[in-house]
Length: 140
Length: 130
Image (cartoon, rainbow over all chains, first blue to last red; front, top):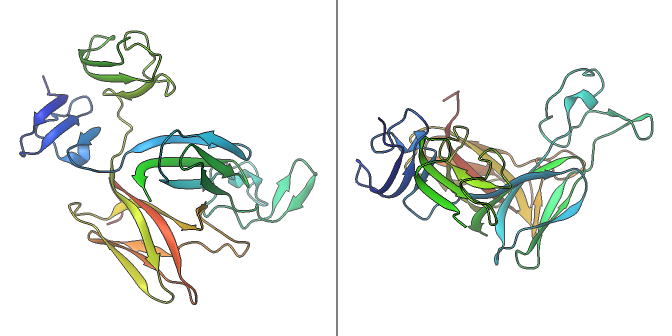
């Protein structure tokens, strides 16, 4: 039986909470293989989600956290790549693409951006395209 | 209302299950992120090694030291300024943050003119190409 959860001291001497995936010993495995490792003041992911249109997202934290946003225009929208799927990098795409709303071809989407509102109560995401966002517990 | 269970979980395996407010560990769906915040059977997780803000002056490469990794890691970096977090590209000229990484530092490269700031997150996930 493998030790999946360690509360206290690990084999390498570190103290904290350590959780390993099935088949991996949380007491001896390298930290990089663990599912959860809390032994120091490190950043954690608080929220990972996406919006399809500009909107406020409730956060409920009392500080300005680090946020990483990523537009998710698909390559299938790009001329010459119809029928293929997957996110285009960088985002927004610089390819012209078909706009189903107008029936014509357009240039690049406007860049998405996000802003903390109310000292951390909300995250406003201005979505130039479908936009995913990751909020971390590290304050700016 | 039990929101944390350490030991034998509802499906019979041993581990750790933490639920969201309003959900009991005996009934919360571990594959529903609105009900469960952590479940030790998850295998598709990655740890955050380091996160922060870097200020970059024009024409220079601003280094961010990385300690305790020993490999070239997956990371993300985005322009940040005036309270605004930008996407990969942040203007109509498709300009992004130019950066690179090795085992000991992340470098954000300056623009031809003008300074900028960026937020970055480094994950404990080695890149396939080292």
